[in-house]
Length: 506
Image (cartoon, rainbow, N blue to C red; front, side):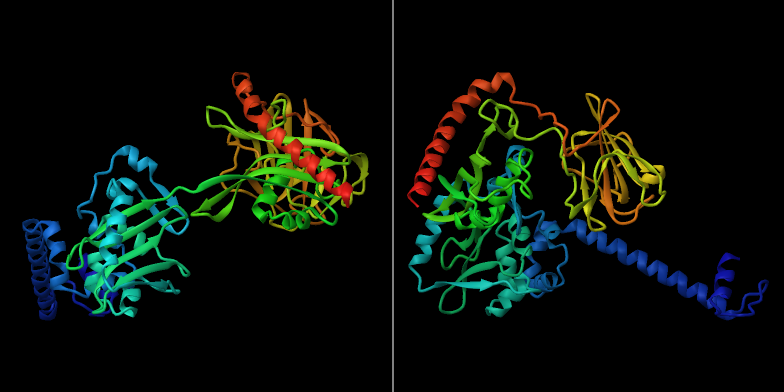
């Protein structure tokens, strides 16, 4: 009956007799039965064949049976890594190796243990083998939409070359299927168009080489070459005449280093209002080199800022437990337990006040927070580590988050456009974590953040109150810190004196 009703609904037989099925309907049953039986037989037969043939043998026969299959899979960007999970690895992988595998921005994680243990030596041997040929390295730049198959086809190589290269190692599949526009691949071919080797730089220290052991060898082997960067200590100083950014750029700093520098002193100095012409910076930082060529700037080791004649010094230190931070010469944290401004604001639209006329209610009453006007949707950060006490609607505050920080400190964030997903009562947050976005919910005349800072329940002006320091260096590590900080502070003193002498000469 159910089948008949389905047939009726599909308008196969609009007026089908329910008691006496027609001959046509009987033929439908017969055809359906034969089709189902045939399909089941084919599935069982395919299963038996798959169990009879080992997966690895089937894969080894893949190029001879269907040479264009690999190229088709590459072009369609199907999950080809799963096809090669059974391929042999050059070296076994241990849990330690897996945890040590590192990921790079433009390529998947590659564990050195998956390749030859003496990868550098093997790479050098391959170079020596190839050096006797008349082949040169050709550089290919990955274009939008490229896959390994399209690149090889453009270079006159076959789909079997794609399979042979990928067959070198199962990790190679992941590396060579993650291609991005602008990436470079080096190919080495001899005069008759035979591919001898492929090379790709995975990151600034790691290079993947896939090559034949000999020119006549049909099997490719993969090696991974690690070349650690040389670390050097550099220093610079500069005087602010127009802006911090311009002065730092003239001193050879990049944007990332400038942001790190300003972030170190952000709790003590308002860079929007406190900077004066003649203020100066001095810093000691790392630089990273590869074969004598500078790759990038590294982390700041020590820095000093002279603002209005007052000296601020900070030293980077990582304790034996792995905790890293910037500290004063006495071991106090440079960061405070709270942020004064937990949002990137345009202006302060309303200050903390004992009596203010409300713009909507038109009554005079205390304004127990500070309003930071900002564009709708601007991220709002947690001012300090704490636990969410409330996340939801709160009267005229609209969408609101209240954080409990311990030691009697609480912060309130009101008029949000929305609260970030996952932020709810009982959740622990860390300083700087995004908890919501600027809006104008509740009683508000425009998008802004209403930020309240309370101590033991009493509202305080966050722009004037003395904020508590973050945790200082553990006493167990204080002696080690001072031993580490002493030479850095001495370097800063020399740099500062040199800068002052240079200014006097001018």
